[in-house]
Length: 229
Image (cartoon, rainbow, N blue to C red; front, side):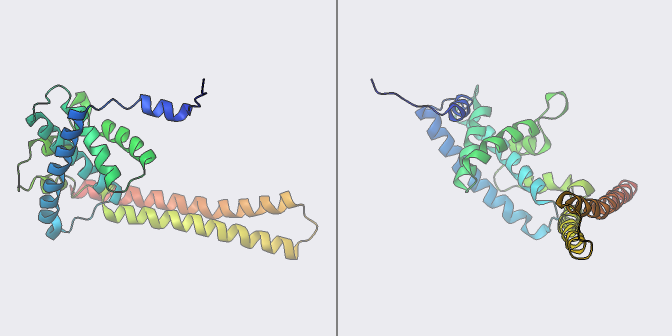
């Protein structure tokens, strides 16, 4: 008898994915085709609006919107009971087709499932509007308009965060290497652990103030945004 070796990690992943029948596959393909048609129209509508959102927020919002679109479309094909799961299966396949790595897709879908619901088990705004959308309307713009004054998802805040992260990372590394180099050359006799510790302490003395300044700037901007609202 031929021995079959199985990968336990792969088995666990596959076990968490519901089986998709041949009929479901055709429904998934139809949902994807419909979603691509809708998103092409919607992206054309919002092109002139020059929205400035954080890339992660923008991607998540569009994906939740498309989930709502495909959920409604799956129901229109007669899949009333399992339309929601079929829509997520379609979105998963669509993300793979768009080049997302299969391992990341599973985690992304789990994240979107959590974000698709809000308080009291209501659908998230993007899902609800996507579900109610009609062909060639301005529904995606309607979703983004709700967040246009939200500082926490703005592109400006995201760029501030990204710059601060790079400053802390590269600045901390530069300071650490500079101190290690200085101690090694001009203070010989120290152990390797002592030299390394000096570099870490110097990096921390740079990173911590930069982090605190970033937090202060974030809270200040958030406070101004709330006052303006």
